[in-house]
Image (cartoon, helix red, strand yellow):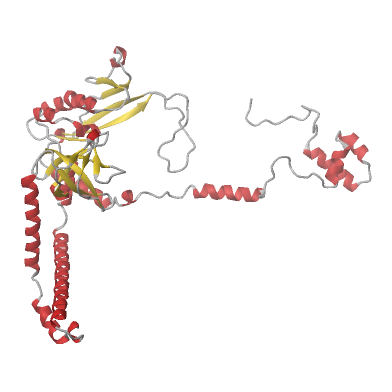
Length: 435
C-alpha cells in the first residue's frame, strides 16, 4: 500500500464529488435564482452542502487547524534550508591547528628522518570494513560525523592493518575477523604474505598487534641493511608491547611524554630570555615590597608617635636604590633552589614510592594526581600508576578497575609523599590532603 493514499472520485458515497464541481454549484446559486434542490440534482451534490458553502458555514478543513499561512510556511522552510548551508562551529583545539603548525611539524619530522633511508620508514594504520554498508545515502544534520540507525541486528565487520614504507613498498595486510574461531576458507585466495586472525570485537588488541609486529613489520625491517628503522602509527595497542619482547628485538619505544618534551624544547631562544627577564623582574618587585613592609614594622616598633608610622619621602629613594637586586644573581639563586629540589627527587626515587604530580591539560591548566612509581626508565622518565580519589574520604585513594599507567617526567613531580596506610580492598590513606 502506498504511503499517501488519495481516494478516487466515486470510490464511496461520502463526498462523491470534486471541489471544483462544488465551487461551480456554489457560483450558480450565487449568480442565479435557481433553488438548492435543482442545483443539487444537476451536480449530484447534497443541497445541505451547497447551502453551507453559500452561507460560509463549516468552511474550515477537518482536523487540526494551521496557524500560519501557506506563504509563511514556505518562507520558514526556505530559511531553514539556507541556514543549513552555513558553516558549523569547530572545536578550539581544531582552530589552533594552523598551516604554520603543520609546516613546523613536518620540518621537525624531516630533521628527524634526515639520516634514515625511505625504505626504513614505515607508516601503518588500521581500518574497518563492513560486509553490508547498507544505505548509500542518508538524511542527517549537517556536521554529523557518524550516521546511526536503530536495527534489530548489527552487521559484522572486519579490521585490516595496512602498512606502507616511504619508498612505496606495501607490506602484506593483516586481517582480523569478528568471530570466536577462524575458518580455513577465510584465509584462502588472499594477497601474498597476508595473515588472518580473529577477536570477539573485530578490532586490534594487544596480542593481535604484537603478532602483526613480529610477523610482518619486524621481518621486513630485518631484510633491510643495518641502520635505524622507524615505525609510525597511532594505535593504543602499540603502547602495550611488553618490555621483554621489545628488548629481545632491540625495539625502543618513544613515550608520549618524552615526545612532548622534545617538542617543548624547540621554543625560540628569544621567548626563553623574555620569560627569564619577566620572572626575575617579578621576583625583584616582590622582594622590594617585602623589604618595605619589614621596614615599616620596624619603624612602628621604635617610634611611639603616629608620624613614625609613615614613610619618610627623603629617605625612601635611598633605601630603594640600596634594595635593587641584580637580576643575574636572582636568576642564579632561583635556579640553584630548583636544582636542589630536583636532586632530592632523583636521589630518593624508588619503585613503589608515591608521588604528587601536576600534569598539564590541553587548555594549559594543571591537574594534580597521586601516582605510584612502577618503573624508572631513566633519570627524567618514570612509569607511574595513577590513583583515584575516594568520593567520600578525600584522604583515601584507590586503584581504578582499569589500570591507568602513563609516563611522568621529572618536571611534573611536585614531591615524594610519605608512606600511606594500607587499607582493605586495595585502598591507601594519606595523613595530609593534597588536592
